[in-house]
Image (tube, rainbow, N blue to C red):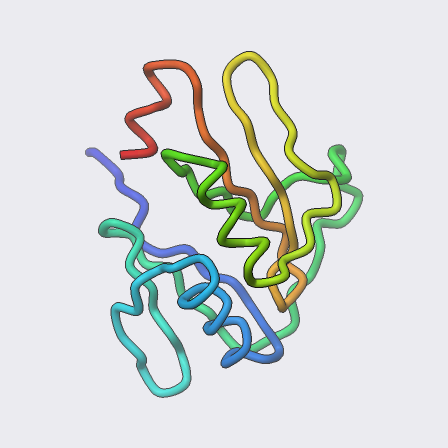
Length: 127
């Protein structure tokens, strides 16, 4: 049996503001709107924004780890888009030998990451 990720769900108290962020700031295509529940297309996987209060991980071993990470082909272009929309990036650009990334909070408070991979295997995730 081969499994493929189908749906990722995030919670937000203000769904319209959070949906605006994912559509207009990050540029994700809106696939459907079922009632008040937006569904964004992530190349065959759906990102769904549900009404509710996001809860941080309790007693997390890593205090700062994103809830979801999006692979991008060009982090610098993505950073320009975030800056134009006034997105705060409290830790700035981080990097190691295999990738460069930036983390920020969406309007609901979910910790999100954009990552550009440098090694060939991971580059397939960005395409």
